[in-house]
Amino acid sequence: MEMEYRSWTRQQLAQLYHTPLLELMHQAAEVHRRHHDPCQIQVCTLLSIKTGGCPEDCGYCSQSAHHETGLQRQQLLETGAVVEAAQQAKEAGSTRFCMGAAWRQVREGEEFDQVLEMVRQVSALGLEVCCTLGMLSQAQALRLKEAGLYAYNHNLDTGPQYYKQVVSTRTYQDRLQTLAHVAQAGISVCCGGILGLGESEDDRIDLLHTLASLPAPPESVPVNALVPIAGTPLGQQARVSVWEVVRMIAAARILFPRAMVRLSAGRDQLSDEAQTLCFLAGANSIFSGDKLLTTPHPGLAKDAELFSLLGLEPRAPYEEISASTTSAMPR
Image 1: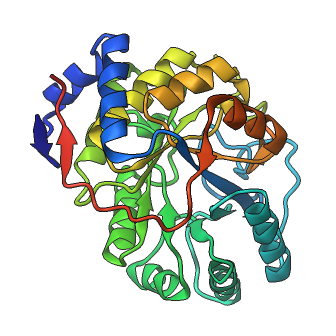
Image 2 (image 1 turned 180 degrees about the vertical axis):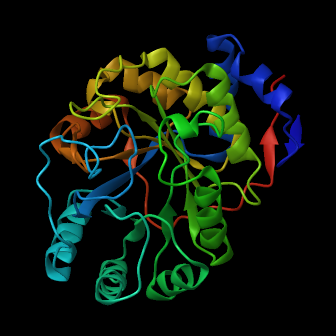
């Protein structure tokens, strides 16, 4: 049975989320195979183009100027160095190249102009280009689109009720406003959350409900597991279990049949068997490389070994992704 996008009530979504796990995985796997090749994985590379010194106080982040984590700050990289890194990522099998800058919001000026040039040159390599630069105005989103930006990442992190326990320097509405600017500019929306912030299952359901209530569905949904970092307010949090990650991935896959559901931060702590469960539940995108911004991540060789074992291959860039207008209802 198909259900119109945005017609999920919170009660229906809660029922979906609490479906017995094996049944939830089965439903998600069926949805996944109706909309995607289960043997293809989107391989992405994320590069920190400006590291540390962020004025936001996100409780999980090593790059916040509010926390003493020992992170070495790095100014905006030179364009040539970024393009070289993108070329290396392409040669290593990545088809999407993401650039992250530790900014609260994009400011007009020389640095933004430099980022626009990075987008132009990386796009010219034939890679899907993604940025995560903080909050954007409508005009800035349009300039990024004109430069060749394919996707913009701006995570909601958690549900609206719990968000203020994690971040105080911006509001949930600030995040939603940037997502609206991105979508209105015709840029693909990449938006997900983080598990393990101390949130409840109700908060996770609220996050999914918020994502499902956006004017258009996100093209990419990253599912992150908190990597606790010493010196941050959440540095002592216990890591979430793989079952929590699998449940979130499966629910996201059913909610967003055509989206790329990305197994993101925290993957370095997952065994090959755990990652396989995530792929079965509908994850079809990963970040590759030794680091994810500032946190540890499985290396290229380990990923290649797992892909070979499971018979997976990288998905080509710019494959047609239709806007999801329907979502599969649980039976």
